[in-house]
Length: 194
Image (cartoon, rainbow, N blue to C red; front, side, top):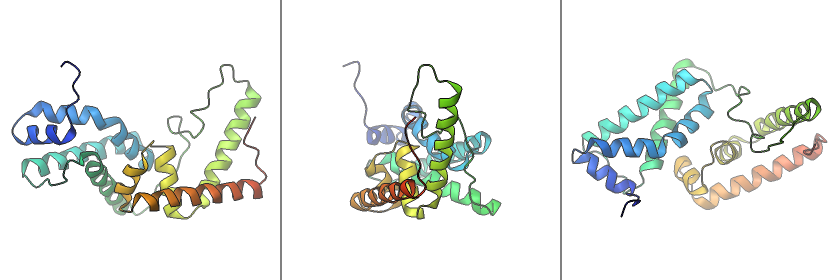
């Protein structure tokens, strides 16, 4: 019985019944995905920390006031709260996010080369920056799905829940995003292999 994973819905219920540890379990379980999502949008650690904390303050207030009714869909609900707080942040600051190059969120961080020489690192950096520019050229809905899938490692179900569309729509947007990227890559004659 030691390694029984308690479902989110049960932890939420336990927390609402006064078990403070249940919330700690939920936060530990989902914090890297939620924080990763926030950070990928704001690309600033301090702001991401603030929004992450505000997200859970809102979660706690909602749960404490018994206003939670998400039928066990805890993670998409929390992601929606954080998404709304990110939008509020940019509204307050009247500017949309700048996508700065960061070590943590690199499209090629999955590619590992045991002994990268300077040339291959330069090529990878160039390809990556070309690719990021092309991703910026995609329509917003396609760009959003692509970034959620690649940078945040969200499932299509989570993407669908977060963007309020069906899974088929999310899959379709991803397919079009990849087709459009392929066209842009060919148009710009970018070679994606070193």
